[in-house]
Length: 108
Image (cartoon, rainbow, N blue to C red; front, top):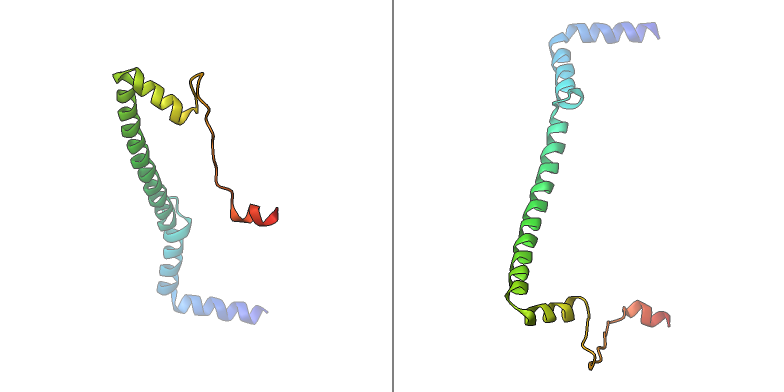
């Protein structure tokens, strides 16, 4: 066992520049707080956040348009209440039809 360790250290000492380079690359690549792995993870997280920002900006634009329509008059408010909230006037009947999954139909 001691012979193997001695041979290993002789090999490391003989190739000390390569060994130093490998250790340096491991430290920089994986262990350092500013490692390449950490930078990749941060960049991926930033890309996800940018995508979320674009989705939220689109939602904000759509909501602004809907708000402008609601501010335009009573008819727009009634239409929104009928479509989104399923409200109805006293003389109407509203039927909500949903499609069932084919898997649910087969189970019955």
